[in-house]
Image (cartoon, rainbow, N blue to C red; front, top):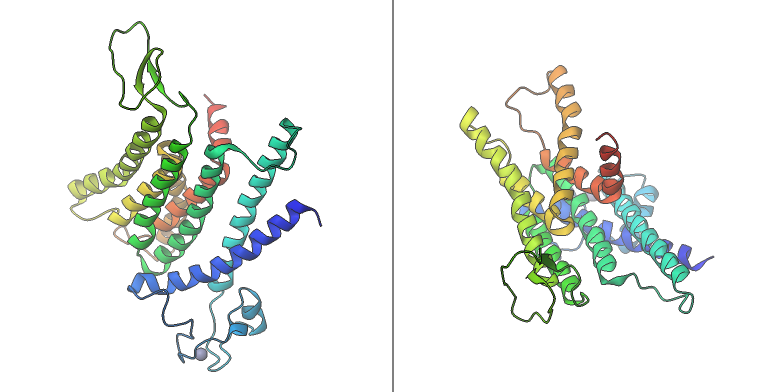
Length: 316
Ligand SMILES: [Zn+2]
């Protein structure tokens, strides 16, 4: 077996294990229960699961989707969440392999060194963690109409932290913003050793301030819709959870990808809402789990966002 294949297989197994943990979060977080204690158990007969009944995917198949003790059925959501996280991990692992191969092709003297720059590395790590959180939020909003802060707010902190790491390792003058030299505005930042042109923002300032602005800008979109909705119809439209979810996507990916995720979420929820209305399963004031669709939009953006933007630009 080739090395990249071993790496991707390891990512799959690691993803399955984390998917199993995500299932625990999905069941407990919306009800503010501890995700550490007690150990996994059947929600009906409260039997603590043995290790052999707690193996991702395999136990569900082996038990034929029923509890060993009380025969209560185990929803297919469990293996699906495990499988989804595993697939997400394989996709990111594959991108790491691609980057490593690309680097080794460019750098013949160090063919086995996996190094794609801190920027590429933190971006892939951000995508990896964001995918895990989004899959969880998608299911939680769908099932319980909640987007727990434990996921959204933590996600914002992790996203900003990863950008800070990237900022620490910037090369001198990398990502700095220079003002037009024709301008006579003199502005230099503390700690800046750059001497040429008028540095408006150093690279680290640009990255960090830009990302903080992205978080606030992304959160504003659902908030503004919420305020307009309240003015027009006198009731709550989008929840605050949606704003925090948008802020989280902004923290991991930046402002414009968050906008793309939002637009995709709207496109995805539209056919769902129309179907519900036509089947008379919902009326105009029904609450829909927009957070689930927004999470799906975020996952799609991380996967095909750049390709999608290129496709859109081809019409301009
Ligand atoms: Zn049971």
